[in-house]
Image (cartoon, rainbow, N blue to C red; front, side, top):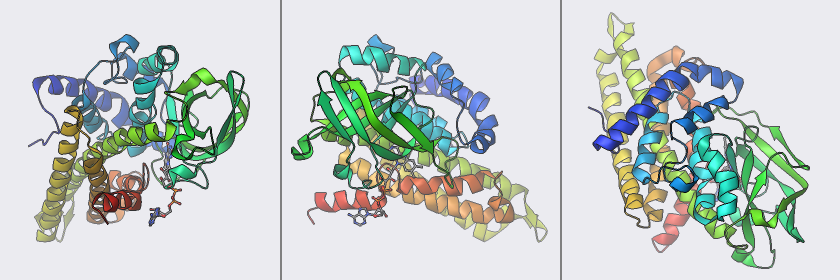
Length: 381
Ligand SMILES: Cc1cc2nc3c(=O)[nH]c(=O)nc-3n(C[C@H](O)[C@H](O)[C@H](O)COP(=O)(O)OP(=O)(O)OC[C@H]3O[C@@H](n4cnc5c(N)ncnc54)[C@H](O)[C@@H]3O)c2cc1C
C-alpha cells in the first residue's frame, strides 16, 4: 500500500511525470553519478522542460504557481532516485537557493536569474556556511562593501553543494558589521565573475552532487543584485531554511522507503540456513519496526506540508520533523545495511550508499543540535 504524502488526482498525474523522469534518467545512472562525484548538468534542462524547477513560483517567470503539496510529491519521487546526492543537488537549486529570490527579488533580478533557473538554463547554489561559521549563522564573515553601485565581496564559504555546477549563488554576506542581525544581506553572485573560484571537496557520501569551498577576492556585483532589502539577509535566510529542511524530510523518508523496499527484495531472495532471510523472525521484526518509524516520520512531515499549504507558520513543526526524520533515516539505513551482510558494505549496494548518504540529514541544513537548541528555546527552557 503506497503511503504517499499527497494523493489527489492532480498530485498523482504530476507524480507520474516525475516518476517517469526518475525511472528513465536518474535511477539507471545513480551509480555513474556517484563515481563521477557530480550530477549531469544537462538534465536540469530536461527538468525545466517538464516544469519541475519552479513549482511554487510565479507563472510570469515560468513557474507553475502551485502550492507546497506539489513540491512534496516531486521530492517524494526524486528521493527514490537511489542517489541522495543527486536529490540534494536538485533540491538545493529548486528549494534552498531560489525561494528568497522568488519571494523578495526585484522583477529585474527575477527575470535575469529566476526565469532561467526555472527553465533549467541556469543552476543555483546556496552559500551560507563558512569555515568558522556553520551552526552559528550569525558568525559569517564574508564581507560585501559598497563601492558606488557595486558590492565588493571578500571572504570564503565552505561545504557548498553545486559549487562546480552553479551559475549563480545566493550568498549571505555581512553588509554592515555594526548592525547586528540587521547587518546581513542576500546577494546574487554569478559564478563567472573575476575574483571568484572554488575547490572541490572529497566527501564520504552524497557523492552524486559536487560540494566545494568558495573563494571571493574583490568580486564585484551590482548592488541591484541584492535580494530584498539591504540588511534583511539574515531574516530572509532563516525563512529560506524552512523550505530546505522540509524538502530534506520529504527526501529522507522517500529514501527510507526505497531502501526498505530494496531490503525486503533482498531478504526474500537471500537464502541462508536453507530458507529466505525474510522468513527469520528477527528480519520480520526489524522490517516492521522500520516501517512503523517511517510511517510516524511521514505523518509528521505530512503535517508540516499541510501547514505550508495552509499558509501557517510551520517553523516549530518543521524543526521537529528535521530532527526526527534525520534520526529515522539513519536508523533505517543502519538496519538495512546490516540485513544485507557483506554485500551491503559494497559501493554498488543501494543500502551501502544510503548508509553513508543519509548521515548528512542530521548535519546539513542545520544539525540535530541546532534543531534541539531552537526547540528548547521555543519550549521555554
Ligand atoms: C555534504 C554537505 C553539503 C552542504 N551543503 C551546504 C550548502 O549547499 N550551503 C551551505 O551554506 N552549507 C552547506 N553545508 C553546511 C552545513 O549546513 C553545515 O555543515 C552545518 O550547518 C553544520 O555546521 P558546521 O559544519 O560548521 O558544524 P559546527 O557548527 O562547527 O558544529 C560542530 C558540532 O557542534 C554542534 N553544535 C552546534 N551548536 C551547538 C549547541 N548550541 N550546543 C551543542 N552543540 C552544538 C553541532 O551540532 C555539531 O555536532 C553542507 C554540509 C555538508 C557536509
